[in-house]
Amino acid sequence: MVRPLGLPFDPIERAGQTWETRFGPASAMRAATSVFRVQQILLARFDEVLKPHELTFARYEVLVLLTFSRTGELPLKVIGSRLMVHPTSVTNAIDRLVAAGYVRRRPNPDDGRGVLAGITDEGRGVVETATAALTALDFGLGDLQEAERESLFDVLKRVRLGAGDVGGLEPTRSVVDER
Image (cartoon, rainbow, N blue to C red):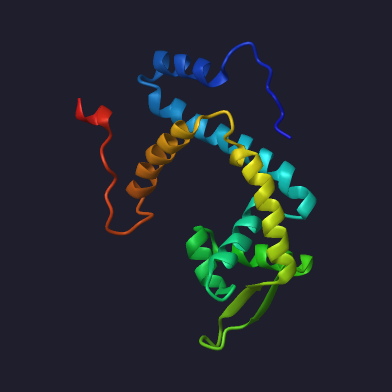
């Protein structure tokens, strides 16, 4: 559950005002700080609906990725690269999913040192149930209209492309940049 702050003012806006007085323009600081606060809010909302299924959002993402694969299994190193997480995080998530009975692990026959993670029938079932819960929650973004969610994705995608998330693609300029 998200713990409401209940403040009589917006702390990020207040920090922005102080920032401008001391350091200069605050738009980047306010935006970045807002992204981090929204991440906290979203993770709390996800945890609330996923906890009854013994899932965290990271484990849920692994299960969904496995359901998206043709065979229902993927090498751990592929899971890490697709989810953009460190190999240690993948191993930890897989260990927990195996313990819950949602995933099985086996040696990768194509890579003597590699490991494949495969989703079980129980894992497929929990993905269906958990996905219904997250979808009903609008993935925690029910406070926004559909068009706003699309715009938010587009704006954040430019940051991800600028960081090199997708090779060979450059961030597109916004209409605001054109003025």
